[in-house]
Length: 343
Image (cartoon, rainbow, N blue to C red; front, side):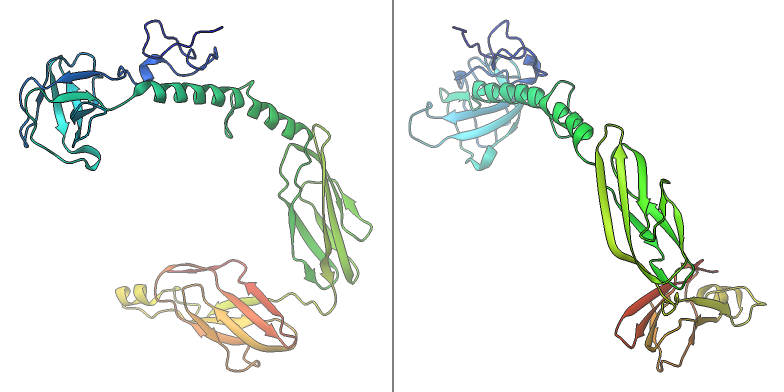
């Protein structure tokens, strides 16, 4: 039968409390207070006292909590006091009335005892450290821990998670589509099926659809350990003569002057630039909603209004866009290709 030791015993070594041999803790990191350390006041402690003079403080930790009042187990009011340093007979650097206890005036002979029962805390802490070491933590688990072993098995055997997106996803034929791969895991091989009989093994391929139709795209990925993952997007690419890609552009009303904002123009005594926004989107449009990128927006009064103007108050780089509402209540948003720089 193994005799369980205390962290306060001479000769204590890391892990002895929970009987495991490989613990990251040591005695210096545990509480040093001996259980039930007691003494008495050698001099009275006034209400505003800043030092506690006792018969013998040598059995108390270098800093911590003490309890003044009736001896433990006896009724009566008590005060908890935190001390930050001590000698063998004086507790110093006090915080009186600790943990909402009531401050009192104490007479000589009053009991002073340790307010921390260290061994219970130490035993639990030591055991938890050993569990953490053996089981492991969720991030950066130690080699040999259960968490690290499970993590390694997941990488080796669980299927990767293939993900991708494409642009544009609709348009008129021939439609060239760029596919961007976001698959996770140790992927070493990609197999694309574009839905029109064509395939690719590139990581981020481009593909041109020559004829009208709805196309389902599939991506299959394979990891270095043989794990496979598949993602399928049904009817993802729409190619039709009716799917004209929306398009907007912007010109400066007077291109011979710099593209000044109102703020800059006022500083230089010049005129602010007026930008003309043009929409070239085809289809049965019932409304246009211009978003200028500076917090300002505008709704066109008529579906026949293909253009509008705007002056920017402050310099900056802006990314204007247009939301087009079609007769079938579908919404299309288009951004200016290169953005807009205003001085």
